[in-house]
Each structure stands twice: as structure tokens, then as C-alpha cells.
Image 1 (cartoon, helix red, strand yellow):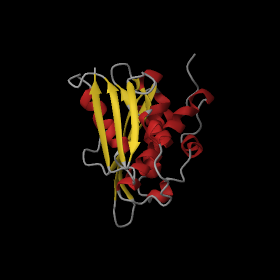
Image 2 (cartoon, one colour):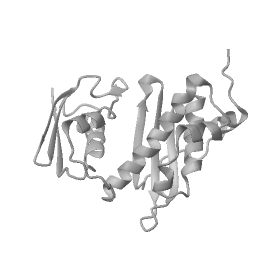
Image 3 (tube, one colour):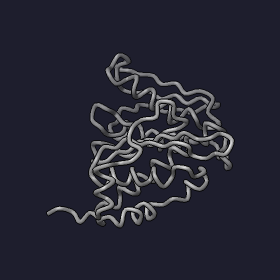
Image 4 (cartoon, rainbow, N blue to C red):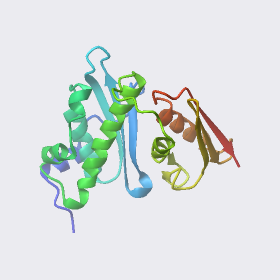
Length: 211
């Protein structure tokens, strides 16, 4: 039985706004996993003087709700300052779409998490984090759970290819159970560097592949 999508949801699904990749993005973030059914990546361009979002795009893998919420979130955030955009909620997305079926509300949460993740990525890069809490191994592992292992489409923690993580004097070392010449080794290294390298008190990230 088809889900009761609103006309607005179907409009944004069939003709999504702001789809694609910003090659010169100031920040980006990915949430979800194709193996779990839905994934979204949000890219931002931000005016450094005003902190206003001048351009925003998204890439989506998933259902109609996932695509539609990515589309509406980018529309709602474009032109706002990063502080204003951080106030957007999944309820704002759902209401702007004329409502979502209860089983698809998580799609709006995913889109909001992608937007907030991209904003956080920008703030960390630009040194705009107000509360500079020292980085812990717990925070590092939380971020590693957002790095996808392309071999299976799940994160590298859940797929148990993270052998060891250490943090000492601002240096993070991550050991991955995968040959260094594996097809996806560079992708995983880049994702780890992106997730950890912007932390304000991390001086260096080292990724070692063994196997």
C-alpha cells in the first residue's frame, strides 16, 4: 500500500532543489548509511564575513522522504546565517513538507543532522567553536561511527575494522584492519581525516592500514 505522501513531498521528490555536490565547499557532512536504507551528504558555502550560507547542496541515497527532506532543508537553510540555520528542526522540515508519514519522520531527522554536521564542520575549520571541550577517545569513536566502510555500506566501527585508536598530546592514531593498497583504503583515510582533523585540539591524525 503506498504511503500517504503530501503533494509537497512528491513535488520535492520529483523535482528536488539544490541537488549535487559543491566541489569547492567550505564544509560538508554525511549522515546515515546506504546499508541502513538512507544517507544524505550536505555541502555548504559560507560567507566568511557574515557567516551566511550563500550556497548549499545535498546528495541523497534513499526513499522519497529522504530526497524530499534533503531538498526542503537546503531551501530553508539557504540565505540564513549558520546560527539561524542551527535552529532549524526536523519538525520545521516536516511542516514545510505538509507532514510526513510517522514511519518516515526519521528522514527529516537525518537531513537536519546532515545540516548541523556540516555547520559543525565549518565552525571547527574556522575556529568558531565557543565551548572548547578537550577531545576524548569517546568523541573520536563517535566520529569514527560516521565513517562508512564502502565494502559493506556500514560504518568502520560496526564492521570491526578499527583495530586500535589512541590519543596522546594532540595526536590521534587510528589503525585499520585493511591492506594499504585496498581499493577503498584512500576513501576511508580521507573520511577519517575529515572527521577528526578539524577538532580544535588535534594537531595530527595518523591512519595506519594493516592486513
